[in-house]
Image (cartoon, rainbow, N blue to C red; front, side, top):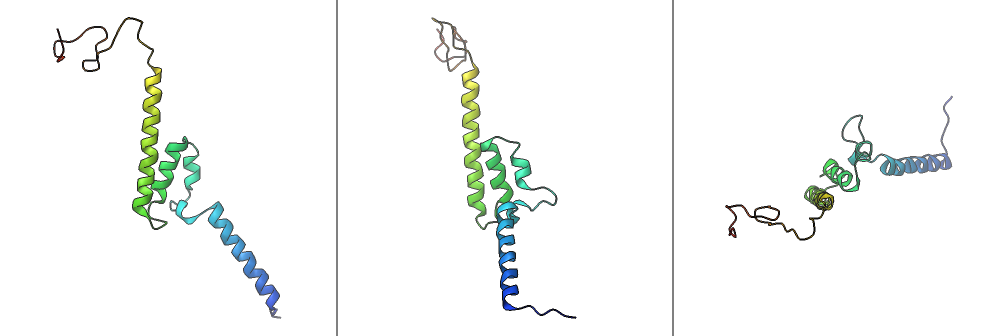
Length: 120
């Protein structure tokens, strides 16, 4: 025997489908699931903020309609990461002992190389 749906059943069903679709767009958006079996978040959560965001924008580039903008955003995060790493590396160098100096041109500490333009 066939069961006939009434209007209330149809409205409830449509409401459930809409909630399911909304949650899919929040929990598992299509633009982060192009690679079968791998979701973007499963990859990016293993990286720091800047690197993870760069990967995210590269991953979804073009899938939300603004490919160049996504790639520019990725580049922005990559540049921030380069700046962070560079700053971190500079902070790792110990300061020069008092009374010594470093020549930026020849990278000599307390002395100049013959190739240095200000060699005396």
